[in-house]
Image (cartoon, rainbow, N blue to C red; front, side, top):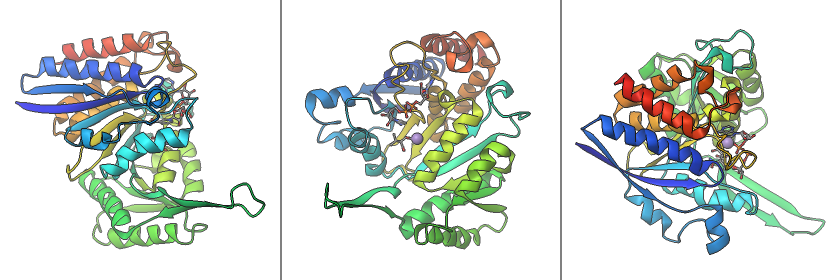
Length: 356
Ligand code: NAD
Ligand code: IPM
Ligand code: MN
């Protein structure tokens, strides 16, 4: 019997709505598999908590999370609390404290009708973006000098360490090698004359250890065009923290929207808990109305299962999602349907029971 203790941070806006559906799916898996059990501990952290307590999480919040096997998070950030406070003090704090340096974001087309691109099939849009998730442009280093004065200067320093850059690039080469796919690095060495020149050098150096992996290297502006004009160029993609953030929203755009974009923040050494969360945010424009698409969050459950070696369940959840989305009545409004968040969760749960 394998037991996984899971910390739930539903967070803000549609976060709690989609997390509830992901938990529904985890409970279904638990019912169907006598060898698996999950326990859930919910943390009330987020913007409401901040408005009452003056902090996004408890002072010892990271210690409280430390001994869980996994963290399952909805979304953080809501009007009323400055975004740089809510996100840096909760979401980014967890990613960095637990050295979740690998952010795995699949960009795969579930159904040809979901892409706004012409004549693209699931064969054309099927990639895995591996985003550096612990440093780079998100290092939080900088200075605000002479605030409010005419000589005001603001510095936001990217930090690209040898260790941090090598490990993400090596992880990506391993993944490309293991799955026999091409590897594309996205960078910007023509303008960012320290960070991205270094990135490109490391990409080449580490590549010498993987002569079998076919590689490409694109500047981020051109890569953004290719995501839209010919996404079939990409299989495994590795990129920095900020560029990974941006290109994965483009990835969401070409696969049907943020309601379908899943993510896993991984500490591969399993020294600390990894965190599973959809790519989207709290979506204040649709929060509390049952309109949110829970598929991204449920797909993150599939990633959680894969990470813990339960690939059978990872695949079953993903296959169920794929099977579900071919029927128009099983879509939320973002995909042109009328189903509610809760109904989608119920249907995935039912279909999962039939599949097994
Ligand atoms: P967002 O992802 O919340 O929403 C962007 C658009 O996508 C909105 O129109 C929204 O309705 C739609 N959308 C998002 N998720 C959806 C879903 N599951 N189903 C259907 N439609 C969905 O991005 P935003 O509006 O730029 O940000 C809102 C807040 O969320 C901000 O505070 C931002 O900082 C935060 N944010 C948090 C995370 C996170 O916690 N991981 C990620 C992105 C943004
Ligand atoms: C994401 C989000 C976060 C990021 C924000 C909310 C800090 O956009 O997970 O993609 O930039 O990493
Ligand atoms: Mn983002």
